Image (cartoon, rainbow, N blue to C red):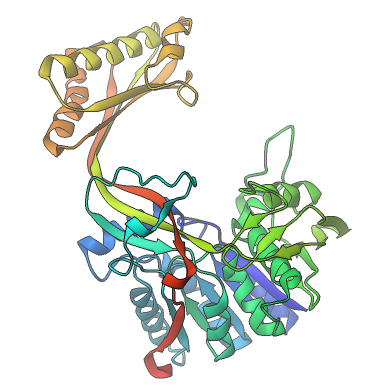
Length: 454
């Protein structure tokens, strides 16, 4: 049996969650792995922006907070750390981890950096296709600042087989973070598609952290989950044949049952018979979920088919400017005053001729469902009182126009309507993300060691 746990499901996840996972794996005395999935497409765009502003940045900003409490135990107990927390700067993340180890007085760890996902300057977008498959290239106005392809698990597995104690990646497919350690441990053949599919399913169930152990699942009165403030992140106990049990550390909050595992298994699955990943096409139509104890679900039946001939790549392009501004209204007639603020800003943008797109939402009404035009808000009956937050968003190619638009919201303090307060504003550049398909021949995954292990 090989135990592999989740330490994070997204950038900004709970930094203390990995500690219980590592302690549980270590207590079994057989080593294992812990994975950190901290990289979404939006997150990668943010990290690319950070790296362009400061070449030493661009990796997960909570990296040290996540690893400092667990690094010593992982190194001592043979628990491999694998994370895409390298984001736009995997070498920078590796350097930070090595420095952390030295600060903690630990032996210099064997840290491997996986490379090959950065395709900027290596391919022409004219040779790619859009992700939606219609063959048309999207509007590419603005400088292309990054092209990162979703790689598979081979380089991760090779690095671990070569003795890596920590593997730092940039853009890889989320399930690859778990598949790599499993292939390295069990020496699975890459042509054994059913086992590769099983390992991919392990990664798919672990990739979102506490989503599979009750977090995102919770809905009071309908789907009750205990101990939400102390959620146990998931652990997979994997057998050589690819079957596995999803569980969580003893004594932690949360819940692992057929419902939580089913919800996560179906997450992002566009076709249950053909979930495309760089390593395999996963078929979950024959998967069975069997309760085998409290917070323990056995998973069997994943099937694999040939991997797709192309790989998905995220293209980051310098976009426009985003302005945000908020103001609150409360008490008698509050919704009417909030609506008046919305109408006032729309008219002020016209009067000043500001070249911006804009949207206004009154939070506490229909803000999550309304269109940009605000038709649902316009038809909403006004109660006698209430407490509302009006949020404005502005987009434009010129920073000054966007800045002037948010200044108009600030001016509502005294220009009315009555009782507005708590204004907050921001203006920042925006990065667009586009999805393309590239040929496998354009991608050469590899790894190298840093520090004393180099």
